Image 1 (cartoon, each protein chain N blue to C red):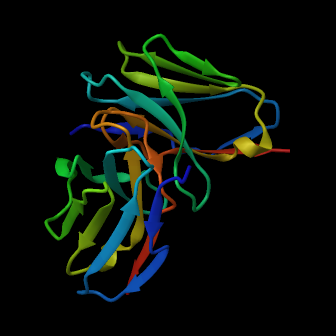
Image 2 (cartoon, helix red, strand yellow):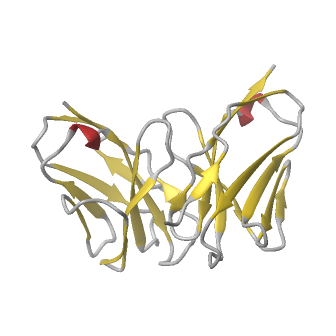
Image 3 (cartoon, chains in turn cyan, red):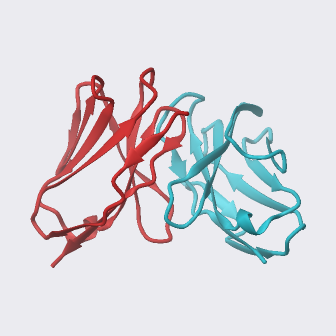
Length: 113
Length: 105
């Protein structure tokens, strides 16, 4: 079975631009969560989507938004990019809404210049 | 503010050693805890869930102490391949900063 997939793998953007990151969960998993990980720190929770609705949101500005599609894949959008948005963006899938084990994709490494 | 704290390390131990990490959490209502390992520039991978009664998986043992609000991970007979960063997670999505382990030959 395929694991969690994310695209693109790497991305370089300029300050002020917009970016869209994509994630496909494990087949049968209905929950997708997004995290930002800066080097040397643990992942920071951005959003959880379950059954196409936002179920949780971390302490991130409104420039960050996401959505989940009927096939349970998800997109994370970041507007007006700042240098500080440079990070590894991780997507995790889990079977349910609660605190289940999560399975991570390989991440998208975003560099903002 | 709900936080999870870990000693960042690094813990440098010889092969075959036993090493233990602790992780403290602040949300006393949390019911679920997990340990993940993360290799350099890779994604976190689930190591084990932490149950109230504790659980063991081969050389790895996880314990939960609700009174003192910490969870622990014990690794016995360390292997070179155990070198990684170990992340503890409290409940819904709160990750600690990770503890770096280096197992030396």
